[in-house]
Length: 328
Image (cartoon, rainbow, N blue to C red; front, top):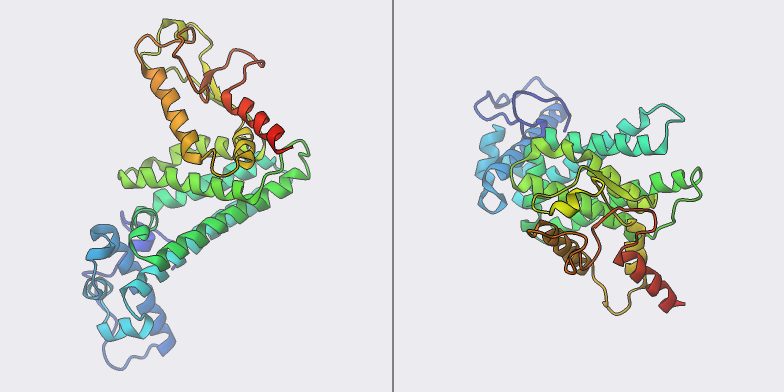
């Protein structure tokens, strides 16, 4: 599949429905050219069909109709609907990675590592926003397509983990103070990014995905550079006058602390969902009427806290240190 947008549809879902089909019978075109055209039509057609109707509802008849090719031509290239769908998903995923790599290679030599990371994230988000139908099938419909689809998703996660690791290992040569992290951390970043994108795509907000650039870059730097995640202007409604009188800035503890905590937990004592639940609880407390830093019930888990000075430490940092001591 190539990458030029036509009309208002993503390139990967630009079908030939309603357009002339390939010439029937003998053609002056080389056989290879005809077959390449047939296959490209089919993979675009399956993206468009699944994005519109969902994977379970789509039939081979729907695909060949949109592609303007015969059923016989379909079975020349694919064994069944699943084969066609997974081929389209894999090719689109490879194109997405290609866009990211091409964008980073265009960054001038000597540019800061943070800029390379930002360019990569921007290219990824732009691709997803520009291909809303592909984003829908990849992030929403794939899990419903069976075990082979799950294997493809898993392979995609590992591919993005490798991109994260490659960037991080190069950056570490220039930033020896940055933390070393396990491979699971790179996988976690890939999974978290995919989940953020999936939530927007599921709500039909693909065009708003590029607005997540700062969030995703900050998430990656929090884990791989050990940086605090500062969120300017975060003061939720109903947080109380005491909270509003404090500096209008909030931050999360370094996510490297959370990784340290997870690495030190044995026998499932601490799970990722537990951490997420705690973070949601903290946000809920922020929204509670009259809640403030002096309220005994305010921020019981301290995963989200008002930044009042370098001496402030959250629960994650304290438990992480305890976990390290327990391991020793």
